[in-house]
Structure formats: C-alpha cells, structure tokens
Image 1 (cartoon, rainbow, N blue to C red):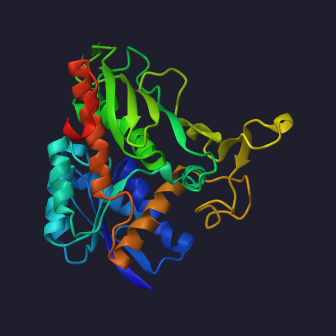
Image 2 (cartoon, rainbow, N blue to C red):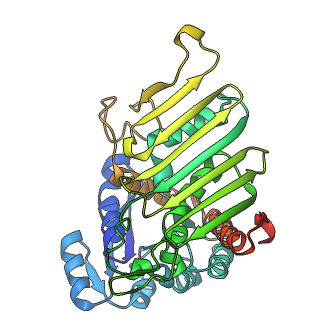
Image 3 (tube, rainbow, N blue to C red):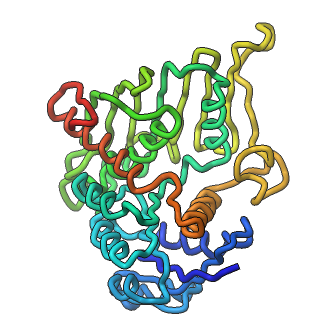
Length: 365
C-alpha cells in the first residue's frame, strides 16, 4: 500500500462528502493507494480551520493556489463553486496532478472545452455519483448484455422541490445559469442517459423560469425544463428537470423500453431496480422488483446482506475508488473530463433550442 496526499478545495456539502469518502475508501475497497487528507481549502481562514479539524486534514489554507502547488498534495478534488473549476483544474494539470472535479465541469461550455483539452494525457474524472448505485450499474449491464433487446425509448427526470415554495428567498442558487436547474440537476440525468443509452444526436427543449422574483431579489436562472431527444442509436427520448416539483426530494428516475423488455429505476428507492422480461410466461409476466445485494456491482464491499442497501455517501466512496484506480493505473476511468464535456454540450444545445424554439443538432450547437 502507498499513501497519496489528497487536497480538497471546498469544505461544504460536497467537500465533506469527498473527505469522508477518502477516509473510508481504503477500508471499504482495500485500495492499493491509501489517501492521506493532506490539505483542505475554503473561502476564509476561519472556515478552513473548522473543516480541517472536523474532517481530519493535516493542514488548511484559504488560498487554492497554495494547495494546488503544495508538493505534498498529489491529487486534487475540486468541490468548490462552478465559477472556480476551470482555473483550478488548469493550474493542477500544468503540474501534472490528477484532478477530480464535481459537475458541472465548467461554468460555461467554453470553460468545459478548455478543461477537457487540458485534461488530455492527464488523469481526470468528473463527479456524477448517482449513476454509480449498484442498481444503476446493474441496469447498464442488463442493457449491454442485451437482456431487454434493442433500446427504443428512454424517459428520465431529475426533479426536486427545494425551491417549490414561491416565497423561498433568493439565494446563490437563483442566480447564474450554472446554478439553475439546467446547470445543477439536469447534468446528472443527461449523464445517465448517455451512460445507459448512448450519445444524443438532436433535441428540442423548453427552459423556463416560473418564479421570476423571490423575496430578496430577481431570479436569473431556470426553475424547470423539458426536452425531447433522438439518440444516435435511433432511440427516442424525453427528459424533465425541476427544482420546483412538489413532493420530489431526489427524483432521479428513468424508464427504458427495449424490444424484449423494460427497466425502471427511482433514486428515492435506490436499492431496487424493476425489470420486465417479455420472454417470461404470460401468466407471470410483469415488472419484477430486484433488491440489490452482493451479486450486484460494488455492493458487497459495503454490506454482505441482500436488501440491506447502500446510500448516498457510498456512491462517493465508489467514485473515490475509481479515482484512485485511475491514478494507480495512470489511465483515466469513466467519466473523464471529455465525458463531462459531452454532458455540457447537451445542456448548451438545450438552451440554444429553447431560444430558437427548434430542433438542434447537439454536435453543432
């Protein structure tokens, strides 16, 4: 086993999740590389010291450049606001340091392109954790193995209700496209669609702000959006994204229809996958609930009991394992920065389609 010094930029919600994951990943997966929480960076010296003590880092700083340039920081996790991602990643790659970056990669498509270009020949990874549940990994395998035949239709959503109340105050989340629904929620389901079905060829979308003002200020980004698309393999698709969908807390859900069956999944019940196989006897044919267990991808390292389940933090630990494996083998693993760029291209095409009120070719948007 070899130690590797980890630097995490950002100590909030995702910074904590990645710090916990790096602390646990060696024990869970018996990784050859064992993370050492070397340095954390936050926006102020006071918050940095709080995070350093709480998470177990050796050192802290309120200057990300010091973290990136520190020789004891050998790999970097970017969990800071989207507006900071590009500059940090470029600086890290200039020093040949592996970079894990939370989604969305850049605050704009141009930034994402710069990041993907700089990542060529480097170790890069983009943070799409939800697709890593054992159930969704198993769904990918079922599709790849042809269990439900040729894919004909996909429906996906990422819906939440944290801004469903019109009198919820304006915050940083209600300003700037990167913080709107298309920047915040849509990338996760778009990533799922690309992973499960394949590239999206064309789309038509509507992006809308429902509550134009909130207590404390105007809203400058989108509340919800809908999209129809055509995948490169010919399958039809539709997606809906919302932060104002009453009653939905983690509405990351999809349905997939193939020529021989279908799959359903809902993240609010993340330890179950529903499978329909048309080749079963008609008398018993129907959607069957499959509870995840040790027979499914990346489940057994967490728990040996079927149906006991994995959770959100476990998804981040799986990401940490993949990032360490990429560093160890000197070969990036999915999803790379190039994969993150593909997601941002679809987001950009959706905005363009909504403005033009027309179908858009994703490759030329």
